[in-house]
Length: 247
Image (cartoon, rainbow, N blue to C red; front, side, top):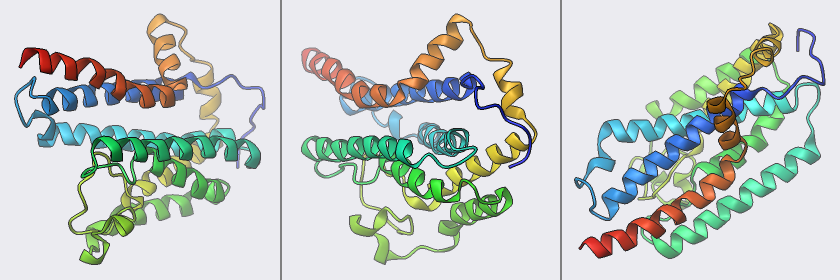
C-alpha cells in the first residue's frame, strides 16, 4: 500500500466532520422539500435546478466518503466480519426506508435510494479496496461516464432503473443508481489509497479539531445514520400539523 501506518492512529475526525456537515445539509435539503410539499414556502423551490444540484452534491459526498471509510477501516486487510455487520445494518435500514416511503408515498417510494447505494457500494468496494489505485480510479471514471453515452428505455422500470441506464427513470423521492454513483465511491477508494501512500492520514490525524464546532460536526458524522432515519419523521411530524393549522 506504501508508507508506514500505525494501527493505533486516532480516528480521523475530518472524515466524521465532513460526513456531519453532509448530514446537516441533508436535513436542510429535506426541510425545504417538506415546506414546499406542504405549501408553506413558494411552490417549486425544492425542484429548482440549483437546489437539485445541492442534493446531488450531498449524495456524491456520502458516496465518496464510503470509499474513504472502506480504505481507512481495511487498510491492512479486509475486516470481513466487521464490514458484514455494518453492511447488514445499512441494508436493513434501506429496506425500512423502502417500506415506509411506499406506505406514505406509494407513487414515488424509495426503491433504490442513498442507503441502498451505500450498502451495494460497500460490498463491491470491499472487493476492490486492495486493488491498485489507478485501476480503481479508471473504473470509477468509467462508471461515472457510462450513463452519459448509453441509455435505453428498457431500463425505465423500477426493476432495472436502479442500474442507472434508464432514459426516463420512474418517479422516486430518492434515486441513487449504481451508474454513475458507484463511480464516486471508487474514486474515493483510489484517492484515499494514494493519500495513504504519502502518509496523509498521519498529517490529518495530527490536526484533529477539538473545538466546539468540530466536536459537534464529528458527533453528527458518527451518528449520521440515526439522524438520517429520524430527521424526516420528526420534520414532517412538526410541519404537517403546522401546515394544517395555517390553512
